[in-house]
Structure formats: structure tokens, C-alpha cells
Image 1 (tube, rainbow, N blue to C red):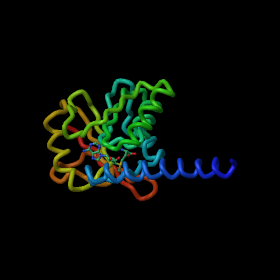
Image 2 (image 1 turned 180 degrees about the horizontal axis):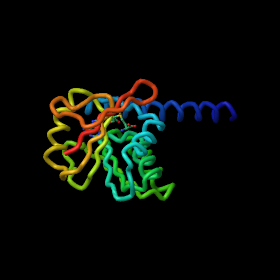
Image 3 (image 1 turned 90 degrees about the horizontal axis):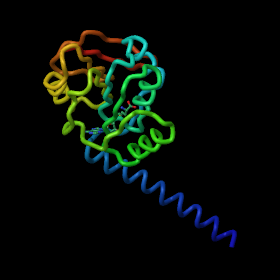
Length: 177
Ligand SMILES: C[S@@+](CC[C@H](N)C(=O)[O-])C[C@H]1O[C@@H](n2cnc3c(N)ncnc32)[C@H](O)[C@@H]1O
């Protein structure tokens, strides 16, 4: 009896792990960008340095498990939204938002097919081949005075207005239109 309970537990654990790994792999095939979270200290730096506040509307393009969105909301009071194609990561973020009474929103959408015009700040930690399309959409859809905060991989054509070196060998580029 005890043996079958233990075996059942490990079988369930294996199935959960298989689901997580395969859903992450499918998301990777769709986006070509793996889920790698931004360090919490980097998010704190961004909120402080750029003076994010409750007046801001912040979109994280490719929000993973929602870490950036939750921290930005907590530290600045900004209205924060994440767009994400990965299944378990968006499920996790949505569940956390419910459990913590967060006002953060999470949309299981391809951010290239989403409307960004509601935001005045976009954040992305993505991959060089995507940055040209993001730059174009940023310039087209956001209002004058809006910011793009880009981690590690700069826009290919637009000049940044500020660049900061973060702890642990990362950089952010800030663009203003
Ligand atoms: C490097 S992770 C960054 C996660 C989060 N922004 C952070 O900094 O902690 C990039 C995420 O973007 C997601 N992603 C990439 N392309 C996407 C797209 N077109 N639409 C929605 N999500 C996308 C990936 O699934 C991945 O979870």
C-alpha cells in the first residue's frame, strides 16, 4: 500500500515535470526566446532611477512568470500588464495575481499582435532578432513622452537617451519618443 502511494507520488511528480518542460519547449518553439527572469535588484534600480510612479502604465513584453510586473506594481504603484505566450508562466502569474489581490493584468497573447497604445512605458528583455520590430511598433503606437526600457539587446536603429550598467553584468537602454 505504502509502496503504491510512493510510486503514485513520483509518477505525478514526473507528469508535472514533463508538462512544465514540454510547455516551456513549445513556447520556445513559438517565440525563440527562453524564459530567463530579470534580477529583482535590476527592477528596483529601474524603478528608482527612472522614477516610475502610480501615474505610469507599464507593459512588460514577454512577462514570463510576472516577476517584473509584480515588482513594478509593488514598488511604484504603476498600473502594470504582462504579455506572455508561455503556458505555465502565464498560469503562475495569473494565479499569483489572484492570490495576492494584485491589480496586475496578464494577457496570454503574442505581444506583436497586441495594442501597446495604452502604455507610457514598455519593458523588454528579449532577443536581438526581435528588437527591430519592437522599435518600429514602439515608435508607431506609443504617445510622445513614452519610454522603452530595454535590457541587454538595444534597438538597432534608434539612439538611446540613457544607458545604465546594472549589477551582475547587465545593461539597460532607455529610449524616449
Ligand atoms: C527572457 S524572458 C523575460 C521574462 C520577464 N520579462 C523578465 O524579465 O523577468 C522572455 C519571455 O518573453 C516571452 N516571449 C517572447 N516572445 C513573445 C511574444 N511574441 N509574445 C509573448 N511573449 C513572448 C518568452 O516566452 C519568455 O517568457
